[in-house]
Length: 214
Image 1 (cartoon, rainbow, N blue to C red):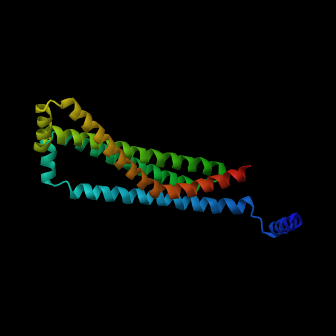
Image 2: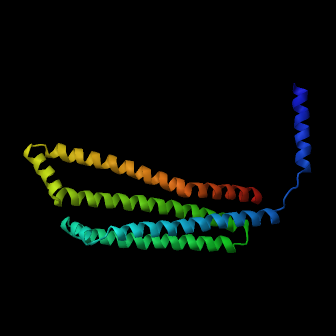
Image 3: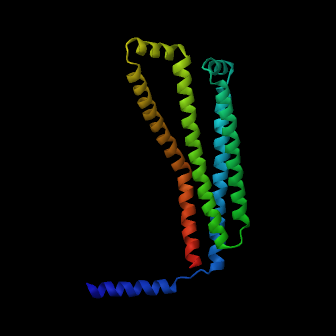
């Protein structure tokens, strides 16, 4: 049995020796091209995502919605958050574009590795920003609904009359945290699927470049 394994090992080594070995000059352009394509897709997806959410926001931002926000005393805050949100997302899209250009014109594996790390860092920051902005928006809407809508006021008054104000707010806080956590997890999974596959490919390219540097 050992002799057979040894023979197989020698046969495999012979096959490896006969395989064509690519030089640095041949491997680097291929990795660079693949990395550039991945970052380009990240850039395109971020634009599509921006247009998609902006479109939904426009569709649901009719006069009735604006009046509801004003009635809940959160109109100015929501408008301010929307402006900040769009401005920062556009900034991230710009950074994705700059990273794409950097990869396209980089001239060494070391610089390419640095740019790949920057892309990964930018995507991570982008995902975290979206999760944070969602959390802030959820808190603001919950505040408006509970304190200024007829339904919310009725629930609060009922709890106060029953003498369960502390328990009521405790339950509200726990429930809100639980619902927000579930939604955040779903959003995180969405981004994990959307950008995770591309980042995994970038990580593979980075590791290949690291081997070339050794």
